[in-house]
Image (cartoon, rainbow, N blue to C red; front, side):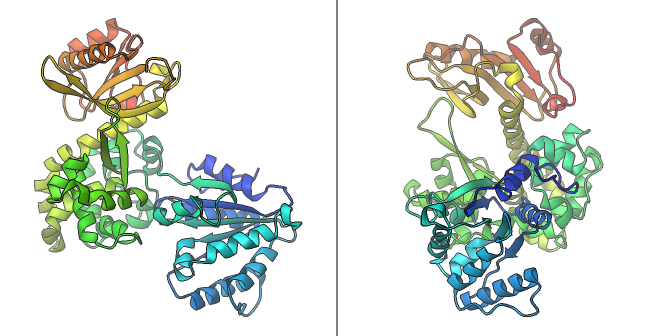
Length: 497
């Protein structure tokens, strides 16, 4: 196993997957696909992989086919030490030379931003497939090439291995580079010892590594009290790279033809309209007219569709990138004043909106991630099937109970679905017995509907703490779990039994 360079933060699992693929000893070509949203560090990882193993790396740009062939030939010339670029006649000619670089042993051959090449020549996946097959064992060929293609356009990359695509069935590696988890992001930014600050920072920049160094040059809030200063001088300052990032993330997607409509859809979700009908009503469209933009945003990885834990026919939408939520909820409505340099004034009147429209929903997302990643020691015996928000109808009260964090066991045919936990999350409210009683009512209603609630843990997640009565109840009842910010970030645990 090739040791991960010390300057790569985290990404241990990803590095092991890449190096295992690149150093495989099979005597035939191997093909892999790496994808992920922009700014997650894909290029950083692949460049380091090529450097560590003496491989070839080429990053495509937008351009014509002739220009890209020339750039590819120049990159190959630099790699081989040739003083002049290779004048390839076409991509088949170029790929023949490309594969020859691995004659002496397993060698990673990496093409980054592959969708740009596909745009210039849509037949390229078919050509690549043919060249891979020629060097495969079934065709009597042998090759040490470990070919990796990478791209940030998820709508394009997702189709490369799907359906009847030429390269379907050829990949031995399909690696998606995700954002850092919220705990890893806190460590990456150096705020792991201040959970409240870590959660607030994550609500703005999420787990996207590039924002720390490439966009704000390491500037981070020193404390919760310094958070306002940081927002004004980094995110809302028209002179910084982060200022327009929320707009650019949408503009960079190749499948988006009408940015105004897509911005409106994202704005609706950021405002709390997370259902199909709610989004349509907010932007003044018929429900049937927003199917395409919703599908495109989902394919691009900018929207996440999540089904209701207890109403499978109902889905909710969530913006995948926190910075886009921040942009839509805080910056876009104030774009004129921000353009005039009135960042401090805008933040002063928008801070409460940040707490209600951004921080509150984001805290619920963090709590669901906590339940998924770290909740097994509390309620994971027997396995966790899914974690989602859910709605429980209360016919007696003629209302419904919103469950922010529902943890369900695996679904086994013929067996009642186990409810591992029901949770409520409040960012800025002291939680008390009324929150617990609401969860107990939801548990009883689900039991009456046939769910297995015999081992259900009732969890209260709070950014503001718990009153004495609730703490006393948690100490008495082992089925009650309290999770505050230190517990959420693994800094300390509140006794609950």
